[in-house]
Amino acid sequence: MLIPRYWKRVFRTVENIKFHKDSGNWSDEGKADIYAWGYSDSSEADALERANQRVEEIAKALSSDFDSGFYYPMAVIREEILEELAYEGVRKAIVSRNRYYSQVLNTEEMMFIDIDVPTWAMKPAGFFQRLFGQAKKIDEKNKKEKQDRFDSALKKVEEYASGDSNAGFLVYRTYAGFRLIATHKTFEADSEETRQLFDVLGADALYQQLCKVQKCFRARLTPKFWRLEQRPEFHPSLKFRITRSMLLTWSGEDKERLKEYDDWVAQYDKSHDSYATCHFIKHIGNNVVSEELKSLIEFHDEKTQAHSELPLA
Image 1 (cartoon, rainbow, N blue to C red):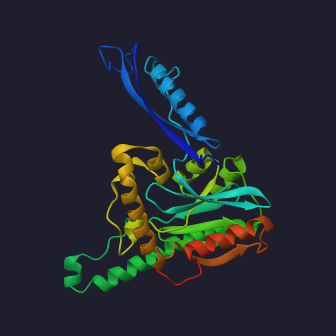
Image 2: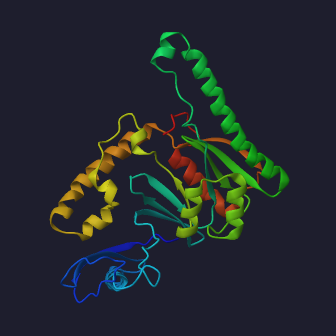
Image 3: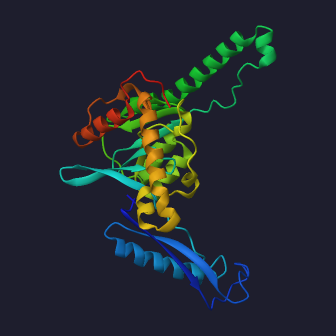
């Protein structure tokens, strides 16, 4: 899993850069202000060293054309690690807080599959339709269409399981579709086997790409804050992907935002307690659960309040 424990930011003015025409002439003086993040799973010192290396890479890239060595951004999750979960002494999962502050379960081998069911094209009854008594008819039509789309998505899972007697999936209803947990075996997130199964079951394309790049499966444990009725105000650090651990390494005005961050997260955590992130529906196919997955499934179900009757968010 590419979810490092340590992050360091470096800001440097690099001089004597011969800007390539593809990069544009940032400065007549041949210098550029560059900042970069470095990460490490072992120490802050390693993270700092990597940040300095990345500054040099960016400076070198500014002297190159786009086709030969142009700097490519790192493909790692810049998230705060809240908890690590192990099985028989080996780390199997991490709980992190994503850029909009939801808690996320990242797993090495337990496959999650997100299946979104598009409903955005279904228009609710408008003012004049309600005025002339057509609202009920339109609402019923939309409700049926939505259910048909959900049934169609679920049918793919049932058909796959019926064709593979070993396959088993826990099915959960989410706010925008379904979540599956493969229960019969473990998987590698970036494997061809995983890609093929994602394609067959209709996994969300963006989720597929994320799993491949980050080498892990991900499932949101807590709701998106904008779906909460008593939602916190929009936090400014959202768009910058700032985490609490990053704020701790900064100084001045940035460090002063730490209390604001903690207050916002506390408000969010209190607000989402009355919502579920998913609802358990049923177990499709082989109902034997792999032993090493049982504790993670229990953890997931508890955190998402999957067996409650709370509203989804």
